[in-house]
Length: 186
Image 1: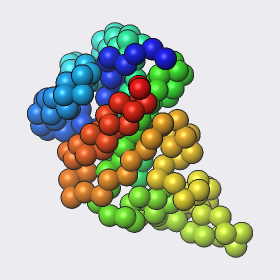
Image 2 (image 1 turned 45 degrees about the vertical axis):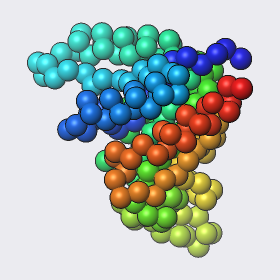
Image 3 (image 1 turned 90 degrees about the vertical axis):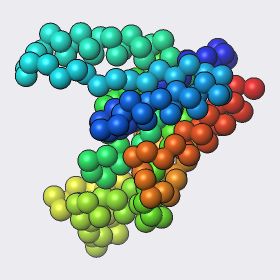
């Protein structure tokens, strides 16, 4: 196994109004663990519709992802019952590159620890006559009693679910992932 020196951190933190403070906290925890944190930045706000700038940003982000030795993915629900879409994309890229990933999810209650419960709370869920959960459009809701869909849950070497009053800023899950990564690297 390749030694882990750099760690990609993906999650909704880039969208926080205090994203710089949160990134500093993340970097400090990684540094204590002997790792360089690669914390993604948000694309700068420019002229609306600047496709060239967006493509350049994407290319730079992909190059950064290739440089990471491993990843910690924050799957905290963001703007709905699931994780930030860019975070999910980056988790998939890391998986495709064969990089080990660890994940955490912050929720405000035990109920939020299951995927179906979050979909139900946000959109509504109906148990049909065949005992299949469906959303208001009649589409099947993946129900395996897991905190996330199988593909996100299954890729993570470990996925920690943290109940917290501050789901967008609590870094307990990052700390647990760093501990798990240290055991993995031994």
